[in-house]
Amino acid sequence: MDQGVENSALIDLFTKKGWFGNSLEQEIEKQIGSEFMETASRPVTATNLLDTARAVEEALSADIYGTVTATVTNPNSYIVRIKIIIEPPANESTGLLLTKNGLNWLFQKFNPASERV
Image (cartoon, rainbow, N blue to C red; front, side):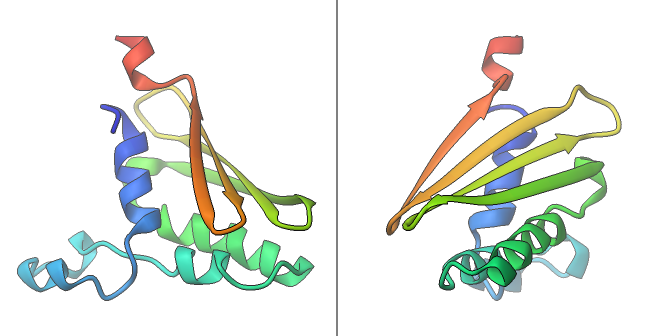
């Protein structure tokens, strides 16, 4: 994992809602988990691509992310690409590219925090 906002974003995206560890956190706003994985795993339709973009933006709605923009595309039958631009209030913007290739998720990032140190 990286030192920047990427680590937190990936945890928020790929942790399912209702994660058992949330029982240890009393403050609801600090609990993690989202509908992203469930939404992104649905069959590829135009509606589901839009729903996936909304799920990304909802999962990354905490103040630390600032403005989040998600673009979801389907370049061919079994590939879904999700481009996420995160513009935190105090730092430079960060881009994440998630690719669902069949059953596997691939994660790439442009401008990783480790290269900015």
